[in-house]
Image (cartoon, rainbow, N blue to C red):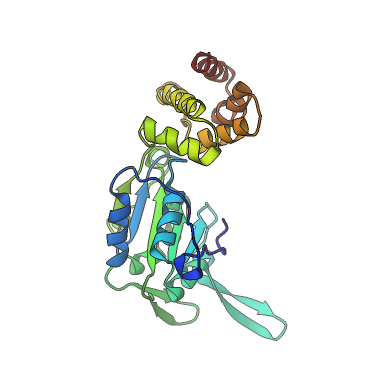
Length: 272
Protein backbone atom coordinates (compact mmCIF):
# COMPACT_ATOMS: atom_id res chain seq x y z
CA UNK A 1 0.00 0.00 0.00
CA UNK A 2 1.64 3.25 -1.08
CA UNK A 3 1.69 6.61 0.63
CA UNK A 4 -0.87 8.02 -1.80
CA UNK A 5 -3.40 5.21 -1.58
CA UNK A 6 -6.12 5.81 1.03
CA UNK A 7 -8.02 2.76 2.19
CA UNK A 8 -11.77 3.43 2.23
CA UNK A 9 -13.59 2.82 5.48
CA UNK A 10 -17.21 2.19 6.22
CA UNK A 11 -18.14 5.66 5.01
CA UNK A 12 -16.95 4.65 1.55
CA UNK A 13 -19.36 1.71 1.50
CA UNK A 14 -17.09 -1.12 2.61
CA UNK A 15 -19.05 -4.19 3.67
CA UNK A 16 -16.37 -6.44 5.10
CA UNK A 17 -13.14 -4.92 6.34
CA UNK A 18 -9.64 -6.30 6.87
CA UNK A 19 -9.86 -9.33 9.16
CA UNK A 20 -8.15 -8.97 12.53
CA UNK A 21 -8.38 -11.15 15.63
CA UNK A 22 -7.74 -9.20 18.86
CA UNK A 23 -5.20 -10.59 21.32
CA UNK A 24 -6.16 -8.27 24.17
CA UNK A 25 -7.99 -4.98 24.69
CA UNK A 26 -6.22 -3.20 21.81
CA UNK A 27 -9.45 -2.56 19.88
CA UNK A 28 -11.21 -0.79 22.77
CA UNK A 29 -8.05 1.16 23.64
CA UNK A 30 -7.62 2.35 20.05
CA UNK A 31 -11.30 3.37 19.85
CA UNK A 32 -10.97 5.50 22.97
CA UNK A 33 -7.78 7.11 21.69
CA UNK A 34 -9.48 7.96 18.40
CA UNK A 35 -12.54 9.40 20.12
CA UNK A 36 -10.33 11.67 22.22
CA UNK A 37 -7.85 12.68 19.53
CA UNK A 38 -4.90 10.88 21.08
CA UNK A 39 -1.98 9.80 18.91
CA UNK A 40 -1.08 6.11 19.07
CA UNK A 41 2.28 4.34 18.93
CA UNK A 42 2.22 0.62 18.04
CA UNK A 43 5.25 -1.31 19.27
CA UNK A 44 5.96 -4.86 18.23
CA UNK A 45 8.10 -7.24 16.20
CA UNK A 46 8.06 -7.38 12.43
CA UNK A 47 5.03 -9.17 11.00
CA UNK A 48 2.99 -9.39 14.20
CA UNK A 49 -0.05 -7.62 12.70
CA UNK A 50 0.51 -3.91 13.38
CA UNK A 51 -0.44 -2.80 9.86
CA UNK A 52 -3.43 -5.14 9.66
CA UNK A 53 -4.62 -3.83 13.02
CA UNK A 54 -4.55 -0.22 11.79
CA UNK A 55 -6.35 -1.20 8.58
CA UNK A 56 -9.01 -3.00 10.61
CA UNK A 57 -9.49 -0.07 12.96
CA UNK A 58 -9.78 2.43 10.10
CA UNK A 59 -12.52 0.26 8.62
CA UNK A 60 -14.24 -0.23 11.98
CA UNK A 61 -14.20 3.51 12.71
CA UNK A 62 -15.28 4.44 9.19
CA UNK A 63 -12.24 6.60 8.55
CA UNK A 64 -10.04 6.75 5.43
CA UNK A 65 -6.51 5.49 6.02
CA UNK A 66 -3.34 6.95 4.52
CA UNK A 67 -0.24 4.80 5.04
CA UNK A 68 3.31 6.11 4.72
CA UNK A 69 6.18 3.58 4.70
CA UNK A 70 9.06 5.44 6.37
CA UNK A 71 12.68 5.25 5.17
CA UNK A 72 16.01 7.02 5.58
CA UNK A 73 15.36 9.50 2.78
CA UNK A 74 11.88 10.51 3.93
CA UNK A 75 11.95 14.29 4.23
CA UNK A 76 9.46 16.59 5.90
CA UNK A 77 8.36 17.81 2.46
CA UNK A 78 7.48 14.21 1.54
CA UNK A 79 4.94 14.28 4.37
CA UNK A 80 3.72 17.88 4.17
CA UNK A 81 3.90 18.64 0.45
CA UNK A 82 5.82 20.70 -2.09
CA UNK A 83 5.45 23.14 -4.96
CA UNK A 84 5.45 21.50 -8.38
CA UNK A 85 6.50 23.31 -11.55
CA UNK A 86 3.94 23.20 -14.34
CA UNK A 87 3.76 24.85 -17.75
CA UNK A 88 1.78 27.80 -16.40
CA UNK A 89 3.65 28.25 -13.12
CA UNK A 90 3.91 26.46 -9.80
CA UNK A 91 1.20 24.61 -7.92
CA UNK A 92 1.15 23.31 -4.37
CA UNK A 93 0.60 19.57 -3.86
CA UNK A 94 -0.35 18.28 -0.43
CA UNK A 95 1.70 15.44 1.00
CA UNK A 96 0.03 12.44 2.67
CA UNK A 97 0.16 13.92 6.17
CA UNK A 98 -1.42 17.19 5.01
CA UNK A 99 -4.13 15.30 3.14
CA UNK A 100 -4.94 13.31 6.27
CA UNK A 101 -5.12 16.49 8.38
CA UNK A 102 -7.47 18.16 5.88
CA UNK A 103 -9.69 15.12 5.34
CA UNK A 104 -9.90 13.83 8.92
CA UNK A 105 -8.17 10.59 7.97
CA UNK A 106 -6.01 8.24 10.00
CA UNK A 107 -2.37 8.75 9.00
CA UNK A 108 -0.21 5.70 9.67
CA UNK A 109 3.57 6.13 9.64
CA UNK A 110 4.99 2.63 9.40
CA UNK A 111 8.43 2.09 11.02
CA UNK A 112 8.65 5.77 11.88
CA UNK A 113 12.18 5.69 13.31
CA UNK A 114 13.51 4.94 9.85
CA UNK A 115 12.64 8.54 8.95
CA UNK A 116 15.08 11.38 9.60
CA UNK A 117 14.77 13.04 13.00
CA UNK A 118 14.01 16.44 11.48
CA UNK A 119 11.08 14.79 9.72
CA UNK A 120 9.67 13.32 12.93
CA UNK A 121 9.73 16.75 14.60
CA UNK A 122 7.00 18.06 12.25
CA UNK A 123 4.59 15.65 13.98
CA UNK A 124 4.85 17.31 17.38
CA UNK A 125 2.22 20.02 16.90
CA UNK A 126 -0.27 17.35 15.78
CA UNK A 127 0.23 15.18 18.86
CA UNK A 128 -0.76 17.58 21.62
CA UNK A 129 -3.75 19.78 22.41
CA UNK A 130 -3.05 22.07 19.43
CA UNK A 131 -3.64 19.43 16.72
CA UNK A 132 -2.22 21.76 14.08
CA UNK A 133 0.10 21.38 11.11
CA UNK A 134 2.09 24.51 10.19
CA UNK A 135 3.04 24.59 6.50
CA UNK A 136 5.97 26.99 6.28
CA UNK A 137 6.11 27.05 2.48
CA UNK A 138 2.54 28.31 2.12
CA UNK A 139 2.12 30.11 5.43
CA UNK A 140 -0.89 27.98 6.34
CA UNK A 141 -1.58 26.62 9.80
CA UNK A 142 -3.99 23.71 9.38
CA UNK A 143 -6.29 22.65 12.18
CA UNK A 144 -6.80 18.90 12.10
CA UNK A 145 -10.26 18.00 10.82
CA UNK A 146 -12.51 15.87 13.05
CA UNK A 147 -11.55 12.22 12.78
CA UNK A 148 -7.86 12.86 12.14
CA UNK A 149 -5.54 10.58 14.08
CA UNK A 150 -1.81 10.01 13.90
CA UNK A 151 -0.59 6.44 14.32
CA UNK A 152 3.05 5.37 14.22
CA UNK A 153 4.70 1.96 14.52
CA UNK A 154 8.13 0.56 15.08
CA UNK A 155 9.98 -2.57 16.10
CA UNK A 156 11.73 -1.79 19.41
CA UNK A 157 13.81 -4.97 19.39
CA UNK A 158 15.32 -4.14 16.02
CA UNK A 159 15.52 -0.38 16.32
CA UNK A 160 17.09 -0.29 19.78
CA UNK A 161 20.35 -1.49 18.26
CA UNK A 162 20.34 1.23 15.59
CA UNK A 163 18.23 4.25 16.47
CA UNK A 164 15.23 5.08 18.59
CA UNK A 165 12.61 7.76 19.10
CA UNK A 166 13.56 10.68 21.31
CA UNK A 167 11.78 10.80 24.69
CA UNK A 168 10.21 14.13 23.70
CA UNK A 169 8.54 12.33 20.80
CA UNK A 170 7.66 9.09 22.57
CA UNK A 171 5.77 10.88 25.34
CA UNK A 172 3.35 12.40 22.85
CA UNK A 173 1.80 9.00 22.08
CA UNK A 174 -0.31 6.40 23.82
CA UNK A 175 1.78 3.25 23.40
CA UNK A 176 0.26 -0.12 22.60
CA UNK A 177 2.46 -3.20 22.78
CA UNK A 178 1.61 -5.84 20.20
CA UNK A 179 3.30 -9.23 19.96
CA UNK A 180 2.86 -12.57 18.27
CA UNK A 181 -0.45 -14.11 19.35
CA UNK A 182 -0.61 -17.11 21.71
CA UNK A 183 -0.04 -20.37 19.78
CA UNK A 184 -3.69 -21.42 19.62
CA UNK A 185 -4.80 -18.03 18.34
CA UNK A 186 -1.87 -17.74 15.94
CA UNK A 187 -2.80 -21.11 14.45
CA UNK A 188 -6.37 -19.90 13.89
CA UNK A 189 -5.04 -16.78 12.18
CA UNK A 190 -2.70 -18.79 9.94
CA UNK A 191 -5.52 -21.17 9.05
CA UNK A 192 -7.94 -18.33 8.27
CA UNK A 193 -5.48 -16.28 6.22
CA UNK A 194 -3.74 -19.03 4.26
CA UNK A 195 -6.43 -21.68 3.78
CA UNK A 196 -4.46 -24.62 5.20
CA UNK A 197 -6.14 -27.13 7.48
CA UNK A 198 -5.88 -26.99 11.25
CA UNK A 199 -3.16 -29.62 11.52
CA UNK A 200 -0.90 -27.78 9.08
CA UNK A 201 -1.54 -24.46 10.82
CA UNK A 202 -0.68 -26.01 14.19
CA UNK A 203 2.52 -27.42 12.70
CA UNK A 204 3.59 -24.07 11.29
CA UNK A 205 3.05 -22.36 14.63
CA UNK A 206 4.92 -25.14 16.43
CA UNK A 207 7.82 -24.62 14.03
CA UNK A 208 7.76 -20.88 14.67
CA UNK A 209 7.80 -21.43 18.42
CA UNK A 210 10.95 -23.56 18.09
CA UNK A 211 12.70 -21.08 15.83
CA UNK A 212 11.80 -18.12 18.05
CA UNK A 213 13.83 -19.72 20.81
CA UNK A 214 16.91 -19.03 18.67
CA UNK A 215 16.43 -15.26 18.89
CA UNK A 216 19.53 -14.82 21.06
CA UNK A 217 21.54 -17.60 19.45
CA UNK A 218 22.59 -15.98 16.22
CA UNK A 219 19.21 -15.36 14.61
CA UNK A 220 18.62 -11.64 14.12
CA UNK A 221 14.92 -11.94 13.22
CA UNK A 222 12.45 -14.66 14.18
CA UNK A 223 9.60 -15.91 11.99
CA UNK A 224 6.62 -13.57 11.97
CA UNK A 225 2.99 -14.54 11.68
CA UNK A 226 3.24 -13.06 8.18
CA UNK A 227 5.88 -15.64 7.20
CA UNK A 228 3.74 -18.48 8.55
CA UNK A 229 0.81 -17.27 6.47
CA UNK A 230 3.05 -17.15 3.39
CA UNK A 231 4.18 -20.72 3.99
CA UNK A 232 0.60 -21.84 4.54
CA UNK A 233 -0.52 -20.11 1.36
CA UNK A 234 2.11 -22.02 -0.63
CA UNK A 235 1.04 -25.27 1.00
CA UNK A 236 -2.62 -24.62 0.27
CA UNK A 237 -1.74 -24.00 -3.38
CA UNK A 238 -0.07 -27.40 -3.69
CA UNK A 239 3.59 -26.72 -2.86
CA UNK A 240 5.01 -29.61 -0.76
CA UNK A 241 5.11 -28.85 2.95
CA UNK A 242 8.86 -28.84 3.49
CA UNK A 243 9.55 -26.93 0.28
CA UNK A 244 7.04 -24.29 1.34
CA UNK A 245 8.70 -23.94 4.74
CA UNK A 246 12.18 -23.72 3.25
CA UNK A 247 11.12 -21.02 0.77
CA UNK A 248 8.80 -18.95 2.97
CA UNK A 249 10.38 -19.32 6.42
CA UNK A 250 13.95 -20.63 6.38
CA UNK A 251 15.40 -18.72 3.44
CA UNK A 252 14.04 -15.27 4.41
CA UNK A 253 15.45 -15.60 7.93
CA UNK A 254 19.12 -16.32 7.23
CA UNK A 255 21.82 -16.70 4.60
CA UNK A 256 24.38 -18.18 6.99
CA UNK A 257 24.87 -21.83 6.04
CA UNK A 258 25.04 -23.32 9.54
CA UNK A 259 21.93 -21.43 10.64
CA UNK A 260 20.07 -22.44 7.48
CA UNK A 261 20.99 -26.09 8.16
CA UNK A 262 19.74 -25.76 11.74
CA UNK A 263 16.47 -24.24 10.58
CA UNK A 264 15.97 -26.97 7.99
CA UNK A 265 16.55 -29.56 10.72
CA UNK A 266 13.81 -27.91 12.80
CA UNK A 267 11.44 -28.09 9.83
CA UNK A 268 12.17 -31.81 9.39
CA UNK A 269 11.79 -32.44 13.13
CA UNK A 270 8.48 -30.57 13.30
CA UNK A 271 6.87 -32.25 10.31
CA UNK A 272 7.88 -35.90 10.77
